[in-house]
Length: 250
Ligand SMILES: [Zn+2]
Ligand SMILES: [Zn+2]
Image (cartoon, rainbow, N blue to C red; front, side, top):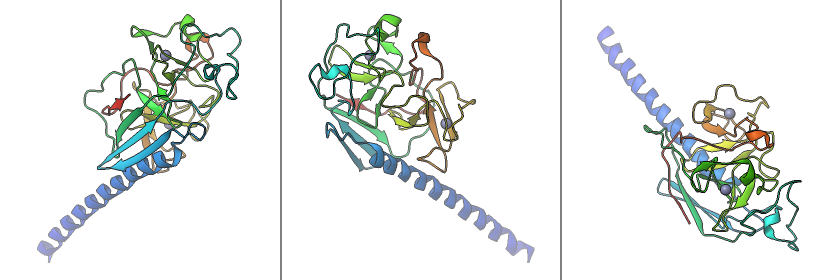
């Protein structure tokens, strides 16, 4: 009898493993669902999402759905700069043709590529997310930050409006979903779902845990909890990606 039991136990173990794989696949479907549920821009009508062949492609104009001085004086969406802040060189923004493609099943990367100048992700309103670097790939300095609006954003020389930090219309001091980085993992505000500041972030600024969108848990980034140069802005993401970088064309 014992000789019969052993193969049955092994078969049960195999079937358990199959269930684990199925659970992981169900989790990945959620990513596409979360992207479809959150990515929109009611003001510019410039965001669309396609899910096909294991990839999620998000297209956008990159124009925000909220107030900023970069809409230009007289525009209904115009608001002033924060006190002491002002347009420096780039005083306007324009629509672009952005396309970010991420995997429906993102995974940790073996080499953890560094983020670089330019888009490293996309906010849920279609605005590109940049890291803590500016032209010349130097760290943002206090003078450059004086060109930020209330959203920690400004256009570059290509009139390409983008977020570097937390801000009034994305996340201030909360657990809001900001968007997704190019490696397919979501980025949230400075707090976790339980309102605490995460204390176990890894070198990439993320950790595994539950969020309001992923109750079963997912690897996710958080905005930095460091008041950058004492400006009141908090960098969204610096350093290397946790996962493998997808494409972002413009
Ligand atoms: Zn910039
Ligand atoms: Zn978290």
